[in-house]
Image 1 (tube, rainbow, N blue to C red):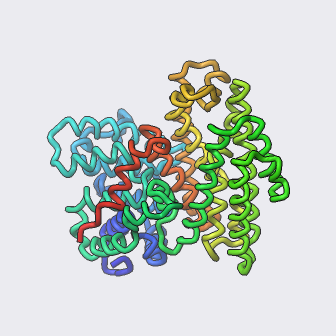
Image 2: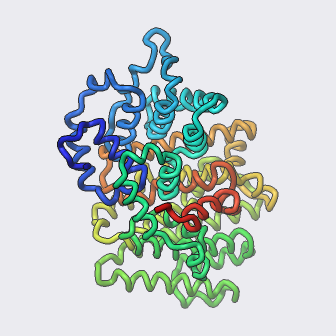
Image 3: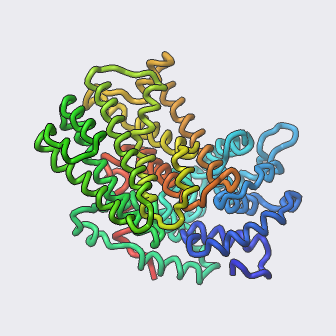
Length: 482
C-alpha cells in the first residue's frame, strides 16, 4: 500500500501517518523514505489552497517527523488577512484543531505562525472540553493536551493510538493486525521483568523509550548497565558518601585503574571494581569489530559525570549557589545524556561509522538541547523537594541569584528555555542540516521525550508510582487485543 502508485497523495500520507502513530515506521523505512522523497520533491504549496485543516496538519506532521521541512506557510490560509488572527471558523473543526496542535509540537525557531498556533489550539481545545464532545474525541483531546505525541514514550503512544483512535484505525485493518502482532511478540510480561534481579520494570520502560526496535537489543543491554552504574554513583554522591569520600572516588574514577582502589572506603570498593569490570566486558565485546574507541568515549563521559557530581556535591557542602552559566555548564554534563548516548553507540552496530562518531564527539546543538531539557525539567519539578532534603543548588536557585528575579519568574524563564530547546531538537532532526541517520539521533531525542514524560507533572523518576506506573501497566500487564 505504501508503494502503490495508484494511491493519491492524501491517502498515501494518511497511511504513512498511521504507520508512524502505530510505531511501525522502522519496518518500512526504505519504502517510506522513497515515497516521501518523491512526494516532497513534487509538492506545490498551491495544492494546499483547497485542503482542510486536518489534511494539511497530517501532511505537515508526516513530512516534519520524517525529516522533511514542509513550510509552515501552508497554514497561512487559516489566518484572517485583516486581523492577522486565526479564522474563527476553524475552531468548530475539533479534529482538525487537535491535529494542528500536534503539528505545532514540531515547530522550529523563527516560525511565528506555529508559535501562535500552539497557544491558539491549546486554548481552544481546552474550551472544547467544556462542551459536549463525542466521548472518543473528548478522550483524544484530553490526552493530547496532557501528553502530546511528539513528546511521549513512542511505544506507549502507539498503544494509546490503538485505544483512542480505534475507529480511525479500522480503515487500515491489515496495519492494525500487524501492530497487534508486533506488540504481543515484542514485549516481556510484567512478571518476567520482576523476576530479573538486574532489571526492574521502571528501568526497562526508560530503555524502551530510547530503543524499541528489536535489532537494537545490544544497545538496550549496554545502556541498561550504564544506567544502573549511574544510579549507584548518583546515590553515593548525593546521599551516602562524605565530601572526602566523594573526592577519593572521583579521583579513582579519573585514574581508572584497579591499583588505585585501596584508599576508597570499603563500601565503595565493590562498586568501583564492578565499574571497571563492566568496561572490560564492553571492550571484549567490540574487540573484533574495531570499535574500542566507542568504549573509550563512554569511559571518558563517565569520568566527566563523576567530576560534575563532585562539583555539585561541593556546592551542596559549602552552601554556595553558582552563577546560572556555571551551573548550566555542569548541569548539562550531569544530565547524563552525553554518556548514555555515547554508550548506546557501542551496541548499535555498523550504522556507527567514523563520520557518525566524529559528529557525536562534536557535541552538536541537538545534544545540548536534549541535555538542557533534562536539566531544566528536572530542576523545575524537584527543586522544592531538594531544598527540603538538604541545601543544594539548582537551575532555579542559580537563575534567581544571577538575574535577581523572583522564583516564579525564574521558573517561567526556564520553561521558555526548555521550549526553545525543543525547537532546536526539531530542527536537528530535519534532513538538512542533519549529518547522520535518524537512528543515531533517536537516543538523543528519545531521552528528551522520556524526560517530558517523567517530569512534566511530577518527579516521575523518584516517585514512579505517580506517572510511570500507568505506563508500565499499559505496556507490560495489559495485552494488546487480538
